[in-house]
Image 1 (cartoon, rainbow, N blue to C red):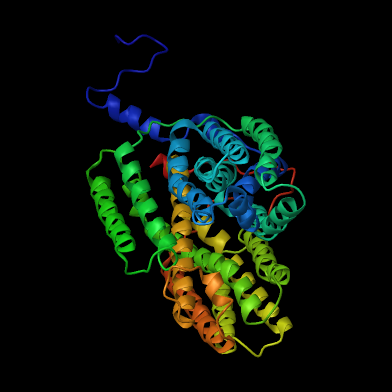
Image 2 (image 1 turned 90 degrees about the vertical axis):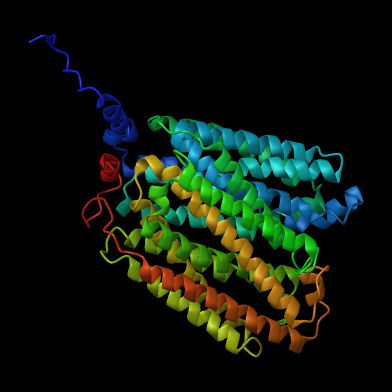
Length: 527
């Protein structure tokens, strides 16, 4: 009787903070009721594609300009740091972007990443020395590290898991076009104009991406949530990743694998990972939520996708070398020979993503993809020489088609298993571990090539391969393809162990493109 009309009764003592905590952990009401049409969702994704293209392109466009940069600064010894600095900061910052977006919202974090990326590009273009160029690349990687994962997270915010796969084809197309077009564009700009233009071109593209992204993301609600950033945990994870990446980058190239610097980096990385694990169980709100790490679907989907991504990245690096040294194609022809691999991957990812909204047992498509890719790699391992070029290209297309089917399934299955309040850190961690798997795979395949041709380290794999005999190269690449096949077998095992949880979303019959998309009402956020 004492309560005033129109006001809810007070919660019993001790329950108010718990009630507020449960309310804070849920998605805000606007995010639960907002419904974008498929045309609007597609507009948002297309607006993000240019942003994502910037981050993906910059990992490939620099390769063909490296010799010119080395001559310009009269510094060949430190040239590899131009690539390494970007990879280190980009990989290490990926989960940090995801966590910050869970706290401060997607738009704020995405725009911050673009601004940092543009600033790093300008610093690289104006660099007066190799040291300044390396520092600029590190800043550029710090900005570009979250662009890919933030795009996937935003897609997860605006459409349900059952509808989400259809947009994975756009992401695959950006990755493939940057892998093929980056080296070509970098070579043209460097040869006919000036090497700095590979960085200056990011200024207008970045500003356009900034304007487009800022505009399209205004359509989304601001999803700020009550999270705390575990700074010590973030520092430990980033430091452990950097030490591991340095060991994998330097091992067999700058230093022998069993040298003191490489072993020291491995040991330091192991200690930092152990400290990070201790922080996970001792922190009040750890950097990687235990609820995410304990989810078996997240673990198996992440590991299956990481194995597949590692093999695909490894093939994009070593298949051109295989074509040049074993099949005797030119450098430009070897680059063009990647088109069947990457093109088939994009086509398969697009088809699989669209079919995920229509089929119940979506895991079977990824299973078939693994089997196809394993069979293709097995054929190349059996016949590293003697096959016609058309046959090799057809096998690469089969491998690409197989790997392409895995990515939308593992990404959507992982996102389907986590709540919206952890979507950013979960997606960022997915891409983080894919990057680590790529580094591990490239290091493993490089060590196999070095061992097969009798290399001892201290010289690049490419330089040694171009001076080795053809029988030694054929022998080495046989084991390269076998190793890639074995990694995919591990990925297949992880996929088999992944629970096929029904995807949240509408019925099988997809609505027309102008119909409202299903509102993202995540039941996991109400638990």
